[in-house]
Length: 476
Image (cartoon, rainbow, N blue to C red):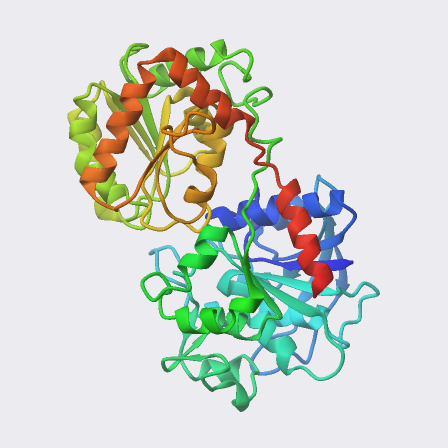
């Protein structure tokens, strides 16, 4: 089968979250199982710099509305995955975050930028394509490519089947009515069973409404988003399409995230030889200016600093956590007020708390290896990747029972399978109790070693998810 991945992010070149990681790893896993997969992604500066010799192979034209004629270039990723780079500098030659301008606000032409990405994905999956290679499946990801399913629905003639993967229901791609004409969509699309959503054009709804099948990134999240409480206005549509909706749990890149070979670490280690973990803890404490204390549990966070991630809850209980006693390291960026509050906490507790605002991939690896316990108190979490990195690095996570966190972390109360600590309500009391349970367990070496063993033995590779996607492609 021939599969076109359409994505607005592609790790390691362009990444704001889990979408970039998935688009960077899943195609290679599918190719390893015999699929012919190519990835369509905007030609952002980082990608043009990485592939300066990318060859032009097409100029998709007559795309409708105000959509321009871009160039399509071809390159080969280091893992052998063919890349199709959508080159239109006026839309994509912009520094920094792919969605936001310098002031942190969405680009005003995002509907055209990602409308073009969606339209070219549909062009490649239709009879209009001039390429010799034509996909059987167009696999779209999140709102930025949701419109591809709508374009395929309205295009005449033979077309590829469409699969829409929902990574986060919170981001819906909402634009005004005038966008319908600008994007070249027919008037018939502006209706309740089309792309209209409470007076707006929704890229996300277009994908949910028109894709031949829908997946999301964990079985629990697939169930949660069909409830009115978690459905963010889309629950009715998702329940209507329940027969076409499934949850496939993400994997992680087990080559990049492997404590036995990770070149970012002070010392590598593995499940049978854990001495290196203590060395990484001491090195991390020194790097971040903390007291070198082997006798204190070191908690860690690598996350966007937002309420969705529950970082306001952790901030509220952090003073009590540090008094256990314990240490805490935080790496991330997000809401400015939260960044300020976390920085202020670190200034007040310099020997016990270190906060780094921003993102540093190498530091993220060292934190996973050096920390004793990882905290992910998310209010909702479609899948989550850091809890799987933590399990692989022998760093039992404390998580809320939601989405992919609930599907990957088993509470320590289960002596046969426990690999972390799970709490229910999104409250400070429930979170603090879970953190205290983790700190208590850490002081019992035999019990702690068993939790680490269970976590490190878990298969978090993409192989299982890839087989599930291949089965779904076959059904389509």
